[in-house]
Image (cartoon, rainbow, N blue to C red; front, side, top):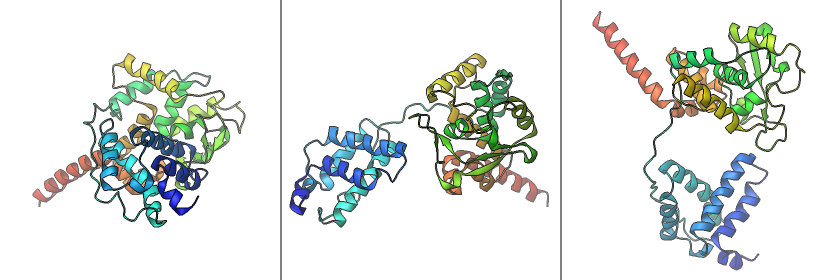
Length: 307
């Protein structure tokens, strides 16, 4: 396609071509789907705008229209996914100016947020309610995520061979492709490959559970697995106990939150969760860190007042 023809191309078609060239095969499947979802919104909201017609006004209108149906953070994510393609169009000379400059991000009022984690008392009630018998079931998966903070896909990929009971360690070096049923996949990032220390209770229980299971086969992912199925199972426990209904990912948040409240450093929690850097951990658990800083301030003032 010539430079002139490219300039006359519909923006949503240019964006789709850009995704195929720069993102397909370069990002994880789940990330690619997010780009394709953004593309479908561009088709819906801006079906006839050509690349050459893209300017600050038309782009701001697109963002505003998207923001009418989405919260501010979701709108910001949408903007960032489009911005990469648009900046490349500027670099290639298809656009003379950057239309994303000084864009105002709006969004509808956030809805009521579900609880992200349980407190220690609620978590203890949940653990006591689990059916941890001799056979593998979803309660064992819930127990493992609670005790380790693993992501759902990481927990599904755990095999008996990943346990080092003598050192009380669990090796995390893969995930399970539960969305497409393609078996093992690499971890989310290189830093997600890690060794997670286990408490003695978890060691004893899992040593007995997996004793006769195939070493290299996943313990939990023996058939098609849906996140919603296990979340529904967890929800039944929560409703039965009359505690906040949280998701499996909420168990990961609970795990990290309890460690932070116990005084474990952000650096150690970050490594345990497999975050790429401490900034990610600080961003996700900012509210807890701020609460801990307030406690530290009280402690400092009490200590100084005794001098």
